[in-house]
Image 1 (cartoon, rainbow, N blue to C red):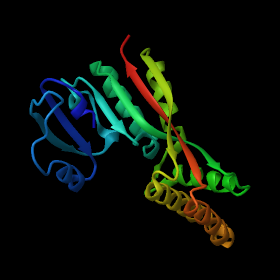
Image 2 (spheres, one colour; image 1 turned 180 degrees about the vertical axis):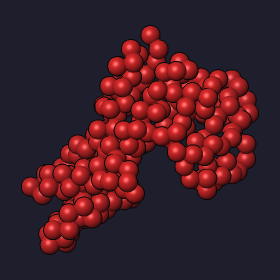
Image 3 (cartoon, rainbow, N blue to C red; image 1 turned 45 degrees about the horizontal axis):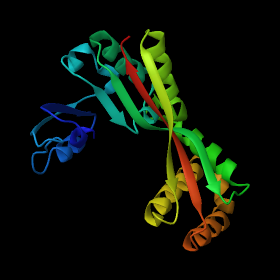
Length: 218
């Protein structure tokens, strides 16, 4: 959250479809901003497909991290439409693009990458997820609405300095790929063993590409 970096009075509304998550986010001591001013927090629960201008009334910014890739077209459209109607700028960070670079490379990397990206665009409980196209869809919708849009490629660079994060990311990446394409199980053990050995020696590096999108009225 940008809250610790911003000065002055702040009031944040945390929105999620899962009420338990918003309650968890509100636990603990009241937060403060950069200059020590107390920050007001409250929660809102509901489907993003139903979000409208009334939900954003008075908002100075709409922001989210690692969100667009797990939404549907209708949900992203609703967010963009609401922002445009009330004129609220939006900043979305860490949306995956589907592009992965592993060093040293392995011929199987691209196969896993393709299966993972297909998993990201699966249909889940009737929701067709945008996956790696989420950020570009949001960017295009804001541009179509006549807004000023800036986007930037951002990266996770993982390696020996953060072995636990590298391991957690790699395990989840391969796991999702195999879930999407069970045929990959036959070669999973040897692929994972090779990568784990490289990681234990400090030889494995990964670059995970993301796209950040900033949109504001002209």
